[in-house]
Length: 247
Image 1 (cartoon, rainbow, N blue to C red):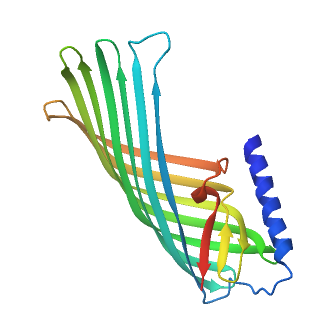
Image 2: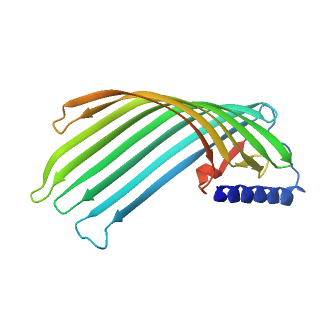
């Protein structure tokens, strides 16, 4: 929480300083009725680590993960300071883990993909010249698919004695409200932040498990719902800063 508070205070000071620096330049409100905006975010994630205890050579564990996402959007201003629009999203992620002991081990891997469309409204509240607040309610429809594989094996000789695969797919709907700050670099380029977000999500689908022989073990129906309140607590381009182009 201390890191979150410090980050919010830092962003407020930065935006306010930029506003004071540029307030003498000619500037018109960019959020005029009839104008359009485009923007979006791109995310990348890649990590890997391994664990080898110093007091034992009979244990080894390795994990790796990576992901990519893109979320473009387009909107237009119904009236001054109020815009509506549509957006799309696509993301993939991969995770692999392997643990080995002296005579056996196990591994897990998971691949997932999400894609969908959504609708949004954004309301800008000018505080001073180029600087202000933004409120952004959204609704999103998403399809997801995931594949997970779990293996158990022995060494010397190698023997894969157990293997299960889980295939999951389904749809989800979510609604959210984001709040943040904006700073108008010019009449066409706007920097925005996301300081907090409230979201509710419901999803349903099914998961099919197959054994080492490829036979179906069972199929389950999956239903999940959640409500989340998130504060910005890390610096990342897609989470804290986005750039909109207005024309």
